[in-house]
Image (cartoon, rainbow, N blue to C red; front, side):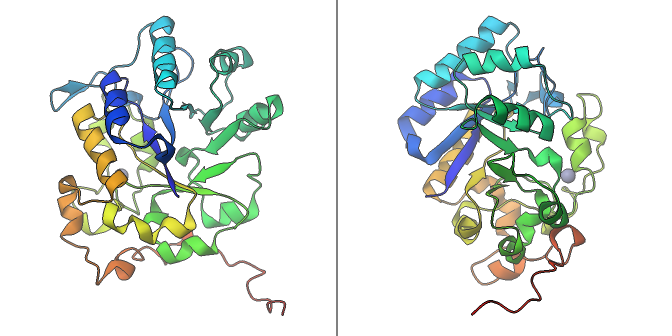
Amino acid sequence: MVKYELPFNFDLNLLNFIDDNIDKDWIEFLFLSPFKDDSSNARSHVEGVAKSNWTYTVPNSRDDYTNFIKEIQKHGIKPAILFQEDTPIASNILDYYLKLGIDSFIVNSDELAKNIKKIDSKLKVVASITKILSAKDLWENDYSMYDKIVLHFPFNRALCKLKELPSFYKYTLIANSYCVYNCKSAKDHWSSTKETSSKVPCLKNINKDDLIYIPPEYIYMFEPYVDSFKIQGREYPTNILSEEIYCYYKKIHNPLAGAIYNRLSPFNGCEYFNKGKDLEFVNYNNPHSGLPHPA
Ligand SMILES: [Zn+2]
């Protein structure tokens, strides 16, 4: 079974929803930002911004933050912490999370990944999407310090290229992002602030043909190539986030994704999900691929 990495929006109602509706075995972990004083993260620009009668807020005190972690664990779910800065965090900060019994981290810094593995090789370390790893990166660099790698947007529309990636790594795809596969501003999305996020030059509102959202009914096409899927939406209100989660859990139609269903059908799925297959980012001329296969 392919598991799902779910976002946590610091609303305990989300945990109750999961209790009532979702099989815990289906959940890989619940990922959340670190305590605000410990590290910045890729979604700090959405903190405190009102959206559909909801404001994503993060705990103000370390005690509050600790209580959220304990609640998640009480519900029988693993928390995973996002460390998306380029540089490793201090070891005393990491210690705080380890002492809480957290064993999964999503990180941007290879050095931090190695440090965590040095502490205990059983700790799980995932390479964050913020690393923006291309096919060439994956073939030519060493990412063996990671248990898993989150693939960047172009791969959501380069289905046939997934099987050409190194098979010695495990991968995750973000299933429900509404960005475009060739977004030139991905980095700016993640690093933007409350003030600049609306000015990021993203074409998602114009190029509806290029969106990377994979509707629940089509997710099976990607299942053979990934170890898990990731659902985004730490900043979503609980009613919307729980609907997203439920649709993937049940693999049912998500009414929120209308623009995608207008362009995708069981008859053009292959073509649709391969629109980006010629992008340089997803291609690598593997020097070994030309060799004859051993009999
Ligand atoms: Zn974008």
